[in-house]
Image 1: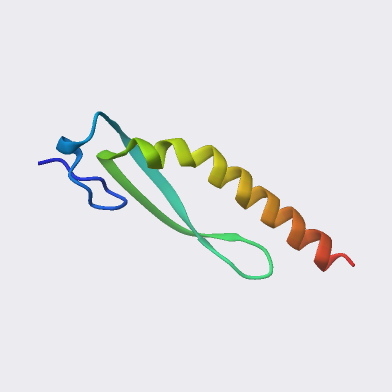
Image 2: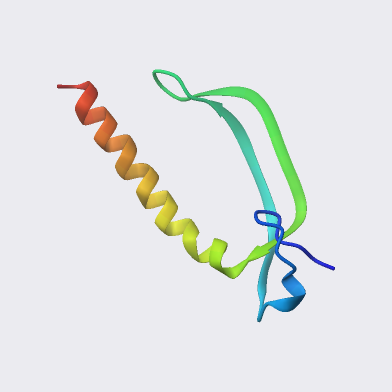
Length: 75
C-alpha cells in the first residue's frame, strides 16, 4: 500500500498521485534564514495530488509573508 508522505492517506484509493524525490536543506529561522548545513533527502516518495497542487500557492504565500515582514522591519 502506498501512502502519502505528507498526510498518510492511502493513495490506492485516489484517482492519482505524484511520485517524486524530495530533498531539502534544513533552515534555521532567526533574524534571517541561514542554512544549518544539514541535508535531508527521501527518494521515491509519493504524495496526494491536492498537496502537489498546493505547492505554488504555498510558495506564493511564503514569499508574500517574507515581503510583508521585511516591510515591517524596515519601518
